[in-house]
Every structure is written in C-alpha cells, then in structure tokens.
Image 1 (cartoon, rainbow over the protein chains, first blue to last red):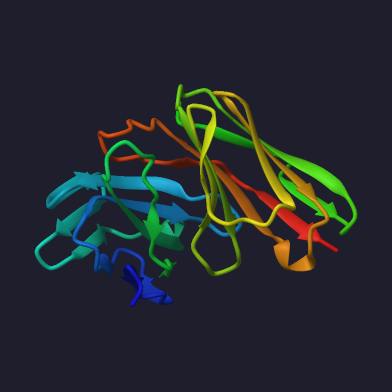
Image 2 (image 1 turned 120 degrees about the vertical axis):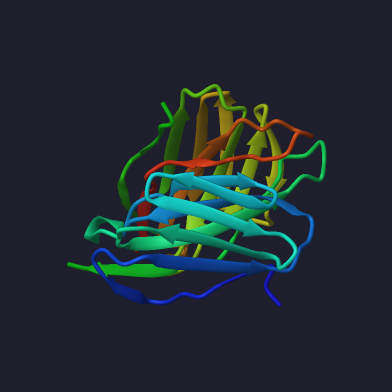
Amino acid sequence: QKEVEQDPGPLSVPEGAIVSLNCTYSNSAFQYFMWYRQYSRKGPELLMYTYSSGNKEDGRFTAQVDKSSKYISLFIRDSQPSDSATYLCAMSANYGGATNKLIFGTGTLLAVQP
Amino acid sequence: DTEVTQTPKHLVMGMTNKKSLKCEQHMGHRAMYWYKQKAKKPPELMFVYSYEKLSINESVPSRFSPECPNSSLLNLHLHALQPEDSALYLCASSQDLSGRGADTQYFGPGTRLTVL
C-alpha cells in the first residue's frame, strides 16, 4: 500500500464549478499537509499548507485536513480555465532533528472547460 | 520573494558528456533538494542538503553528483548518463527548522534534460 493515495484523474469540469481534490494516507505520523499546483512542463507551485486537522482558506482555495480519517481535500470555488493543471498533495512528519522528506501523491490532472 | 531559479531550462547531452545543473535561492533557506520527475509522475527525491551538508542520498547512481558550494547555491553534476535519465530535474529549498517540523518546500521551474 502506498503511503499517500491520490486519484490521478483526469478530472474535467465546466468553468465556474466547485472542484474537490482528495488524498488519503496511511502514516498517522504525518502532521504537515501541502497542495502544489503544477502546470505542464513547469515546476510545482505551493498553493496551500496546513498543519494538523482543520480548514484553511485562501481566496478561492480551501484546504481541509481530517486526521481521524487520514483524508485531506482541496476545494476550488468558481473554477477557471487557468486552474487547469496537475494538483499534487504532499505531506511530511516531524521525526525531530532531521530534514523531513515530503511524500507526494501521484497528482490529479484537472481540466476546466470554458 | 519565494523564487528558486534553475539553469539551464533545457539541456540535451550525449551519454559521454559532462554537464552541470545549477540552482539558486535567496530566501535564506538552509535546506536544498534535488528531485527527478518523469512525465505524469510525482517528483522523486534524489538528494537533500541541510546547512550545506549532504543529509539524504536516496541511493542515486554515482553518475549524478551533487554539490552545495554555499547556502544559496546547489549544483548537480552529470556524467555518463543513460537515456532513461531523461526527465525534468527540479530543485527546491526550505527553511529546514530541524526538530520543529514542516519543511514547506519551494520549487524552481526545473531543467528539462534529454540524454541521447
């Protein structure tokens, strides 16, 4: 079983839709959760970062973490064609004293149709 | 400023060539990373430098040789690569608050490498 599972998609939605992207994980030590957006042939861009459980909102983006279910989500409101990209979830644990590795999901390819 | 820069953007090399990839950040971050990314796959960690010392080597073949000349610069020296090494090579940096948790990593745009 992979440590982080993410549906690869592709996910196609009409402009203006609410998009829900999800990851599940198995390692209960994960405490730090990130979402990256990656456009084709570009480097990943940090979108959202959350620590432990709860919600965090930034403009049209909301990140949600449910540690009891080992489930994280990214919601995109009023989706735009410019949101078309691959979305990668990533997470890490604090093992103390060492640089922590990010564990990535496989990425979900999102296409927002005009 | 959350910018990580990488040069060159594209590189084509033969299997006998020696080349280097360069990465630079001016955010005061003390951890720097090299990743390899194949098409439709997530980034795959290769090396981590923490406070200019190599802290993680993910069993990368010796034809890849990292170097961290100072806290702002990271190089990846390439020699005798194989066609299967063709990929997007990404550099990232983070504050590395060792023992305090999250290393939110900021990525550069990558170098697209083709090995002929």
